[in-house]
Image (cartoon, rainbow, N blue to C red):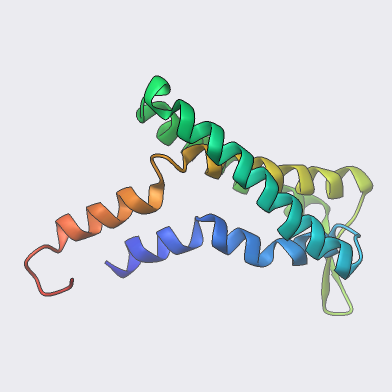
Length: 143
């Protein structure tokens, strides 16, 4: 149960937006601008995409947003990790990302993640994982 719950917590937008200002700072933005880009712009993107996804979810169905969104979310995470592995480093106990192209790529990938997770919002992994957990542990005194 803890593994499923941890997966839900670590793969959702709250975890990413918590660390987004740090990633934006590592990409070379000042702390104040990084906070604005991470919370302000990401919030606006999240709102707009969620509204459109809610309007079109019945037309698209639930499978495509869930599977496609999950694959796109995974691709964003893998690409960000690969960029940090190939262009990242540590200096003075601070993680940095070298190269302007890689810095902008991480920023774009964070915004793409926000779009993907907002696109998945109508079928939301969190809801499905929560239901799965409840079905697995039903009657065992967990919930």
